[in-house]
Image (tube, rainbow, N blue to C red; front, side, top):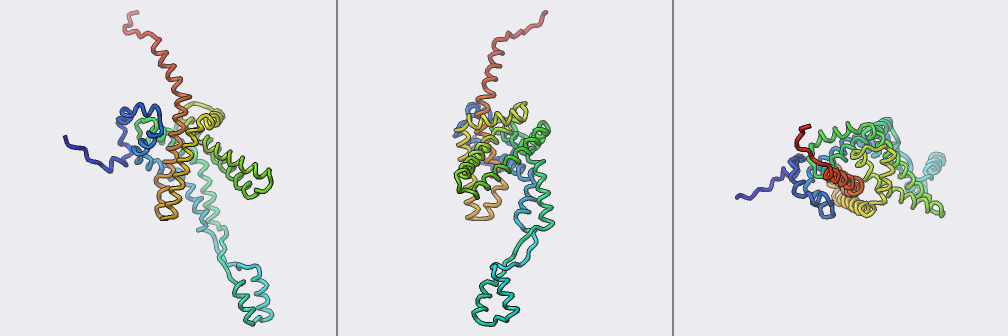
Length: 330
């Protein structure tokens, strides 16, 4: 019997596992979702994760406008003196002449100019267009989370149809969660930056570390929010409440996921320093999806153990107790 050749296309073909063979082969590992299986599943689905990463990037295309505005490439520029003494020295030069070598040397030092950048109309337009992310953020996260959950469950995936069907089923709630998510992240970022630059007094020190704690806890909550949104029919308040509870219940898995994501970001940042093109390209091809896969893998295992398996076992027991009538002769 000839040995099957390795096919590179099969590695990156996002629909190659639609047969469901891997779910049959790894049924016990899908049930446990252990540490080692994380890497097996990651390697098996690297092609799918690249596709999901592209959905994250192009689905949230308004962020590209924000990056363009933040870069300052569209700003207007003008020349401005570096030293505050330039105006005085320039006035002396014009009025008195100041032709001495010492004065000329001083003017050469304090007369340097630099390029100043200020906001242009194009930059303002780009900032306004980036606000469209309030519309795209929630639905894109819902669609991609559905695909990642299918990977973790070992279910067949049809990339685009599953992505858009998940958005259609949860469109209203996904929009609400998208807005809340961005608002919470913006407020927490502002708090951390504000208290960091005002560290000194005891109260500001406490508030700074409390803000860091809140950032970590909300980071953990985000592991569960979108998963619960697509898995259960719960109100917005209950999803946030349950996500907060799970951020403490699943602290061990959450912390491991946090370490994994932090290591991933550090690795890509190191690549950016070593070789800029790779450091720029990789986040747009794999970084976001692998980070989201890590959080989904950690969170779904805990959700499954607490909110799914106990009720599934109860249903199985009910099925065993109920008699099965094979003939209907009444």
